[in-house]
Image (cartoon, rainbow, N blue to C red; front, side, top):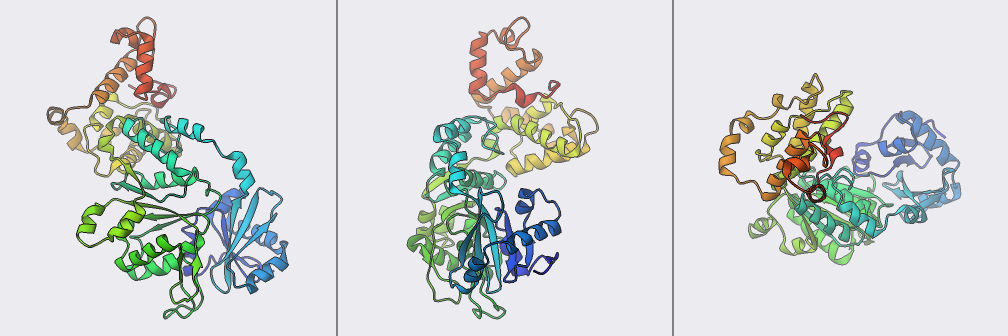
Length: 454
């Protein structure tokens, strides 16, 4: 076997690797491992790509050579290797990407998945918890209700279309659907429809045969083929060129397609998740998007609300991002000005959660003590126009209740009952206050580390 080198691979294959989240490696007919992705290196606890490639190469060289030989001779593009490692929880799925190259994707055995999978009732409880759902953080009733819908559709094969403005976290929702589906042991392949030139989109999605166009020296699999058995996430679906929309519609209707320049019909079994930040109805009216394709995609719509529609989540998100970026920077920042957070809640955040996250990351960088330096990064418009905004905008009753309870808790140093407690300040029964806190998703751990917020 040739010694693996750090020649990462041909550009055509590199573009394919970037779409695969599962532990994946590229190899040749001679068992020369040319590339391992970050997910595989992490799985092996090997940080250096050269070491990871050598390790995979040794395992591949000791694998079932008769199966590998038949894999290259056979016209089929898929095969499976079992027990390539001593850990028999994994199966390696092999997929040809050309006549000379193939990739191996590690997936968990179905019995392992079944053993680890959470049941539906537990997932539903997760949807009600503001800090479960992985990186999704919310205590907003509208958002929580949307997550409950997500839980119900996740473990089906129904096509999901996620609507929402830029920066709202549509990809997080797509990943949540995938993670809770029965296909989470197969590839999640993602494609941004706006990231590739229009004349290249069809080749990326459906692949091509050798000789299909100038420069097509080898067959290359498209993302639809790489995602067989798994999930394909089409981000910014509204940017898909009209000619490709027709072919995508045919795939959704017939469950089959042909590579560019090919005559062989390929059957596909894929769960589609798509997202858009555009007004699809207007695009249909303008003739920029096919109405029939929209109805095929919009089987189960999920609306991801902008941050201005879930302002009560701003304190939760500020503290989450404060902890995240302070930990990364090695800083001990455990205080946030409640006044500045209240001022943030009057800002509309056109960039949504992404804008808020960037703002907090900058603030952490500029903070030199234990109190987050929000004033250094928050647009002056927020502070200058706070009084005007208070006059022009009514807070919701939920927002007013939440803020009033938070102020009382901070003044009482988060004592809910007893002398000098928040319940005393608010003239409420402690049980009533605790009930309201649960309803409004006010959790002490979200706001406090080892010191209280000031």
